[in-house]
Amino acid sequence: MKKTLLYLVFFIGGIYFGKTCSLKYFPNLVFYKNKKRHGTENRFKYSELPTEYSLPFQNPDFIYASCYYDLKKGPLRIRGELPWFTYWSLALYEPDTNNFFIKNDRGFDNNEVDIVLSRNKIEGIKEENNIISPTNEGYILFRILVTEKMPEKTGNYTAFQRSIKIETNK
Image (cartoon, rainbow, N blue to C red; front, side):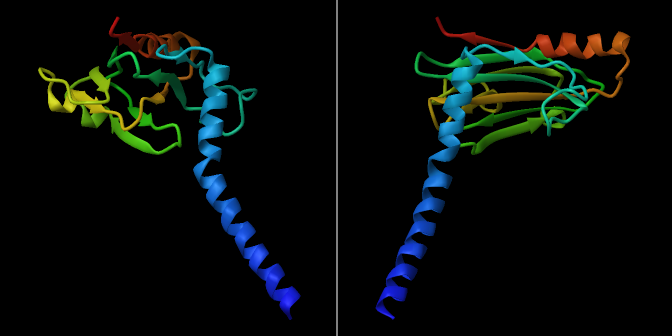
């Protein structure tokens, strides 16, 4: 009986420890591994329209602009002209994958994004354009819905995607 109780305590303790570690540390481990593979921070990478040979689980109807950011050297300004004729969204994530900001095309006044990402509120910038990050590092993801898959039409989407830029405070 004592031996069974001891095994049960170790079993429950192991489950609790495993769950706690996997929820607390695993997302950060994945974030930093992918950030290292990405190679650059504070610079957007632009995806092509996915094909049948793309990574699994990638939505074939979207193109992406993504960026790992670092605010240690100061705030970042994110600008871009996005399409007015289709859905798009902007999402910001902490290293542990918590989403702290998301807004789509209907949440902005027009199709031009001009926001400042910083650790603290910056005077002189409209409140809706002043995004405060809870951490120094994180991930930015723009998604643009591509409704016209013909090659002569997708260039229009790509032009909008590549207009998204990030400016550092040098």
